[in-house]
Image (cartoon, rainbow, N blue to C red; front, side, top):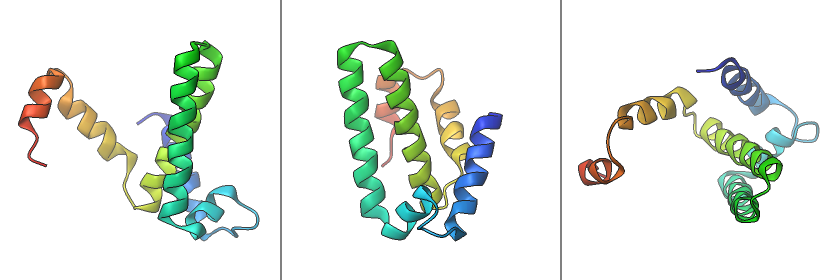
Length: 105
């Protein structure tokens, strides 16, 4: 895992015990899963719009927001981001069609 992801993971974990009045992430945790999912959905939509517009800087900015809020969701559910990287690694080298056919879920 990159240093940035490790650092962000540590900060998101620390925010679980932070005062929601002084931390945006702590306020998301306090509001619960539905609020986190709403924010994640908003960021996904903004990323789609940026992608449609084709502006490189906007795509980068919105994708960063999307990834950040995805990591908030992971932290809220006590999921280490390394597990996501491991899953991506497992899929590496498989065609998308092959991976989909092999799913048991």
